[in-house]
Picture 1 (cartoon, rainbow, N blue to C red):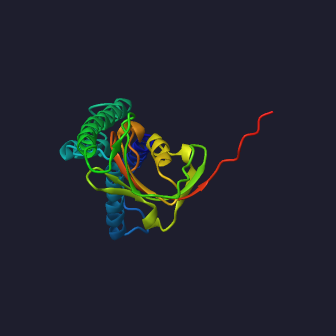
Picture 2 (picture 1 turned 90 degrees about the horizontal axis):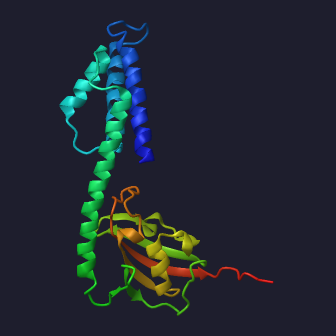
Picture 3 (picture 1 turned 90 degrees about the vertical axis):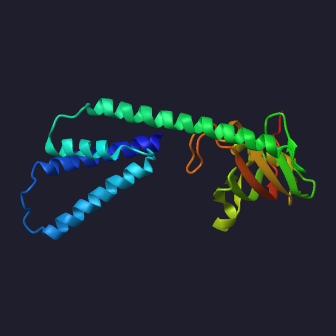
Length: 237
């Protein structure tokens, strides 16, 4: 949401810039050709369109959007002041995220209900499900240990959102720095082994949107536990 608000602010700044330019409409600027004006006009429009797209508003009423821009450029009275406009935008994006969360949670529940009956899948009380794809050497990590992994993350529809394989490098981090589903699940596989994790939203990112991961998404990870580095023992006196 912070990224979205930042984009909204950039759009507002751009509109203020356009407004100031609009006050001098029809006044040629020495040394600037009509061709450059036309190219710049298109560039500003493309920039605004890109920012609106990045904010992921979804389907908007383009007629109303164009009417608002025209009102700003012409100096006409707006239907709402900018403070209220920002409230409306925030309310819309919040409700959009809440709606996506409900839809995705239901999709996840349906997937997990069907998945738990598949061969080799183990369902835990927390809601996490996993399947051992390859056995390791028997050495399993504790939450405070550092692990080196190769992994691929997908949504329940098969859409891939992350892959260390594609980046060409493993990921190394203390296990307790990962999402709850990883913390619990990776302790079920040993070094050199491979596991598939089926993680409900509440053990992943919950109702938050994370990059291409929509709110309420159930996540699937195929993880190869390459190496475990045991945490230093704490000496107590």
